[in-house]
Image (cartoon, rainbow, N blue to C red; front, side, top):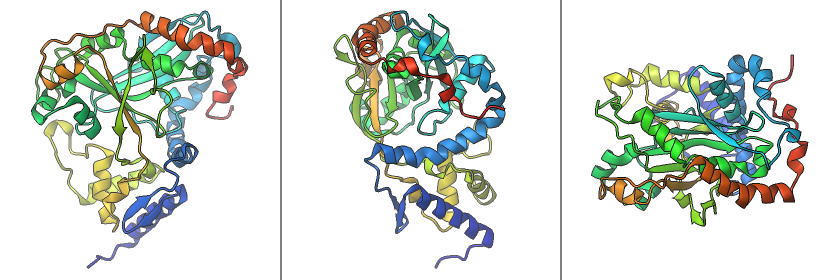
Length: 381
């Protein structure tokens, strides 16, 4: 028999339902469907509210700095495709690079997390003019990802040992006008470079894991990522010297929490804190919940709603980028030595320049008209 809800819980329940319907979801028997799941325009519109919320939440920390940050975004007239020279820079905390990374992330068409666990962030500058080409960030992968695990051929024992040698690209892309020159592909190529693998080794090789206290393996064997809007035009057919760099291996189940990111997530979290105990706790994690999904699993039933509402049905394509000749054998535990491809950033850029950049610049000069003012998030004054 259903338990009567308090007025406070009923108000929150109604807010959740109204917001889901406003986004275009249909609810039936405690489950969601989204009729526009195969339409990229509709999926982009579905994310608009969560993106607006993230922008507003970041206003206090970034709005006053926007003028300075915009100075790192190139006007089309400042870009000469024949002179572009990318430079990879690791983002350190409390730096101008970090501010620029955070600011750029707010322009994505879907809400982007800050990443979990181990994390490496990069900005890519154009040395010819000092302007930003793009950004990417690596973070710990999820433990269970069926398509990835099947492709690798993992059993539980080998995954527990080698998952530390996999990282997830939680954000990646180019900014205009470089995005108009297909530089998203350049940023994706640079993420697989020898420089990134070495940065990972410097940062985490020999470090001790936070929970188990064991020494971490600093070898990076595989990158994972998911497309932003269904099938990807960025990773599909991306190759180096004729060999595919990213391989599509399937689609996500279409679950998550972005459709609750409208400003009342804090109320859901407080509800869970007041009424539930966090699961899978460890003294080193602290007393709170580990992530947003756990919060929703606890909070939604308290409102008489099914936790199945986390299944939004918007699937994203899963891509994997092996970084070594024997990535699969190494990840399975069959090989103890990793044999990286060792492609340098310069080599990857040289391929990109001849294969995509210069032909695109010749065919389409629309990038020349880009005005950085169109990149502004908040009004002047």
